[in-house]
Structures are given as C-alpha cells and as structure tokens.
Image (tube, rainbow, N blue to C red; front, side, top):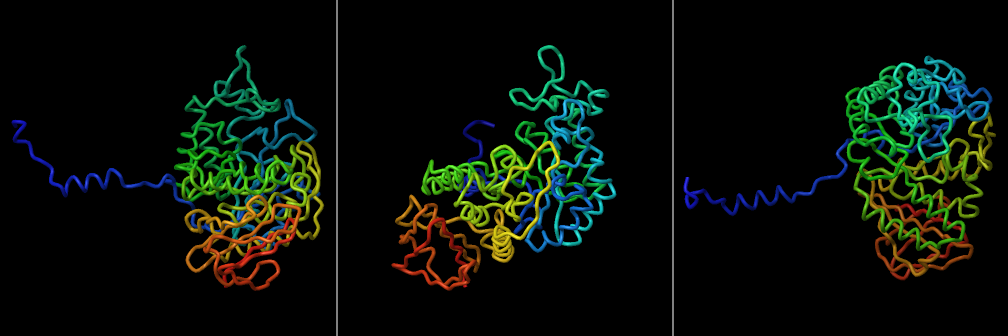
Length: 452
C-alpha cells in the first residue's frame, strides 16, 4: 500500500492509546492475605520463653497473648542447630542443620502441629523464621550437594563474606537445583504443619527472583504472609507483604539519645510516605532479637522516650511488633547462644500494648496497607519537640501527639485536619479540637485521640 494510502488513527483511537499508555499501575502486585488487614505481630523466642523451652510449654501462653492482642506468631528458627563451629553451648538458631526437621530441644513435629492448630483455633496465625542464605557447617547438604555452596578462593566452604558468622556457610543461588530444594523445603512446612508464611532472615542477601518464585508457589498451596528482614521496596512487588522499618527505629533511637530532635521524625515520614510504594506494609518496632541481643535492651536504647516510641510504632502506618518479654518489661539482653529464661510479670508496657492493639483491631484508620488510613501531618509550632499527625479512614480518625522532649510543651496547631471531638485512649478524657485549640503535654508524654 502506498504510504499516502495508509490509514490514519482517529483522535478517539489516539486518545484511548494514550490513556492506556499512561494509566498508573500499582507497584505492589501481590495480594496480602485478608486476615492481615489489622494484624499485629509477636516474635517468639522458644528457647528463652519458658524453663522447658518447648512448643508445649509456649502453648500455655497463647491465651495470654490472645488477650494481649497478638495476631501473628513469628517463631524464631525451629530447626536442629549445627554442632560444628557452634557458638556457645546451645548455638545460634540461625545455624540450620536440617531444613525439614524440628529441633528436638523444642519438641517433635507433632508438638509443632499441635501448637499451630491451637493458635489457629484461637484466631492467630503462625509464621516460621527461615534462613535461606546459609546453613550450618554440618548440614547434610554439605555432603550430598557441596556444589550448592559458595566457595572461597581456595575452593573451601565459607561463611557469608565480610560478616562474623563463623558458625554458618553460604549457599550459592546461581544453582537452580539448590533453589528448587529450598523452595520445596518452604512448601513442606506449609503442607505438613499448616503454617501461614515466613519471616525471611537477611532476605536481601538472597536474589529477589528466588523470593518472587517462592511466593508464587507457596500461594498455590494457601495464601501466605511473608516478612523480609530487609528494607528494600523491590521486595514488596511480588514476594513480601512486609519488610522491616529499620530507618524508623534508628531515627527514634537518635532522638532518644539526644542526637536529633523531633523534626527528624517528621522528615523520616516525609521521605518514607513519598518514596515508599502504597500497600507495602512496614514492620515497626522498638525491640527484636537482634536489637536486644547486640544493641542493649529497650530501656537502655530509649530511656524515658520508650513509651512514646512504643505509641508511635503502633499508630503510624505499618504493623507493630512485640518481641518476647517486652510486655513483661524485659530490661536486659537475652543470651543468644545459651539458655536465658525470660522472667514473666505484669508490667505497664504490656498494658500499653494491649490498649494500642485493641484500638488497631477496631479502628480502620490504623489498619495495614490500603485497608488503613494514610498519615497526614498536623503542623504545630513546636516541631523540634512535638510530633503530631492524623490517620483517617471512612468514619474513623485518630489524632496522635507525642512529646519527644524532657520539658512540658504547650503546642499550637496550624492544621485543620485534626478538628473534631475525641476521647483520649489512655486517660479516657474527652477533648475538642477546633481553630485556636492548643495542647499542653508533659515531658515524654503521649496522646492518642480517637474520634467519637
């Protein structure tokens, strides 16, 4: 056909093509399981939880944890621990000797199944800690499939380069058979024990395309929840529901140590909320096993700012975490390689978490991902000491005011998003915010106003 005779696209066709080309697409392509919409998460250190250190003994705490408001139980690695090059008497749970077996110190496979079944019957879910990057030196795979491991310049097994992890050796993810084995092992526990997903140790050290495929295969069995110990947005696209809010923890710690003021928290969220994909859930925390074991206990890290930081982690976008013993006021570092039992007691921190978790369950403004409300800054005249924001979804609204200073602050608000009638969560006092309203908040104080 002569060039002059070629058909010319109509304006309607061109417009339709343009609309399709420029239509925005969500970054997060996976589907979060429906049950995580308003969920909280709790890290379980089986070894240190009870004198027995077993699944059966831990199961006796499920009613208490249900009353606390826990939804997802993250069990630290439950596999047999390597003996070669072991650190300490008990060794690190992250030195895995067998990916399809249960650590006999914790009990049997039947005990694990019973724990999962009991948790499910109480409306809770169970995810396992998974160590995909490396194994113990004496994992049977070193004998049957040595080619699945990375090697040093002398051709020998090696720990993860640049890290002081002498009790483990690195896998080589360029090997497709190794990837298939690890994926099958992940699927085994979902099929065999009916677990609900995984927390992936140092997830960023493992290629993202491995996790993408593993998630697809796991979801074919049942909808799973995946947590990555990492903070990269690409992991949210097809593999992980949630990653760590490491940067929030660090900025809170810097404020608590006097290295920065409250404006640093404001700038943190200015960056996160404009650069992080919608519907990507971040896990917020003041403590976890790494921080507790290697960076001192939560009281040492946050001092008098601890309660305000706990309130912040449970009300901002994302899912709040409790580490074993926090609710009992854990005030020391638990041994990582040896037995070191938690002392259980009633504590005000447990009460604070219980109140916050109840609010999260019942108030859609605080739900996770797209189910919840976006944070909206409430501009105030004490930005170097007071951080304030609103979250709103449907008819629900929460207005949070936090004093990150050691002095009482009288703060005036320039925004209007906070206008309305509220009841304060902890004091149950009523408050009305309108034009010219101000707030006096004590040193290290916190307010969570819930719209009436």
